[in-house]
Image: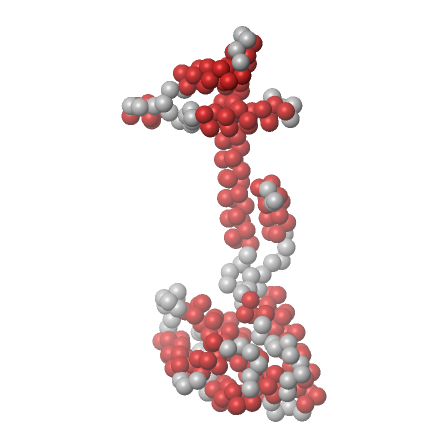
Length: 271
């Protein structure tokens, strides 16, 4: 089991790493079935890029995540109208398996109608649109050259993912927040443990006193609890409640827990 201390060390290590954050879809753009016809592989990849572009549009501009300018709003509207037509939702949103020959023709027709992003739209949209454009250009290349260019585009895409330009947000900031909250959590645990040790030590002194007087274990525990409860009366009035900071629980279960925490602390040679 990973402890709080382990997490603290892992977060320190993670913050020193050049980490990027992407959703799984961005790693599934290029099909892994190389036995398909080259045109099907190319158009399946282009279709996946369009699907990823739709994901980015939703992530960046819907619902009311940003307030787009008029040209961006027109672009988003044109994309939405195109994707909603006919069979397009199935081709570009629901399905990401390699295309059939018939679906490949439909995809090519739609991609040729894709609106050009305005200059003011997010750089992420421009990057993906440029990849789609270059993929479609490969359809006119000789086969051997097309294969090499497709391979180069796949490498270029992986490098782009590594730059962090397409990530939702920088990983460093949430790691900083995680470290801050973990430190606070550890301090709370340490403070709570420290109080439990002191209450357990107090109960143990009562318990040992009655054992030394010759009482049996059960009676010694019972009388020790009575002394502990007397020393820590349950607050009743408003004034008592305000002053009762960090009052211990006085149930048998709570006192037993304090005692166990103290005994473990004592067994380590620290008590």
